Image (cartoon, rainbow, N blue to C red):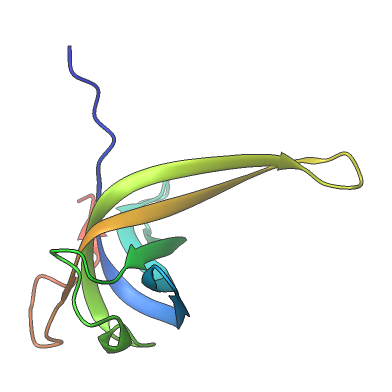
Length: 119
């Protein structure tokens, strides 16, 4: 059996910051996604999820990092990374981060950029 760690997201960029290092550039950005569902009373509800994404420049599948700006609609394919640590107050914390393998800018007119629906 082959193990697989793959995540595919479509959403809107929140904050975006490009940093330059001697080894290249990296863009750290937040991405908001929506998932529409129905609650027990049959009322429509939208589940909003924010994730942090890291995209390294100069790799195939990654556009100009400066094009990833707040409000841009993007598709991201990558892997999910979990980081665990303990605070000074001895509380355990967990953070999830998407390491992007591919980032594509999506035109706003594209009608598939609607919340995913469960009905």
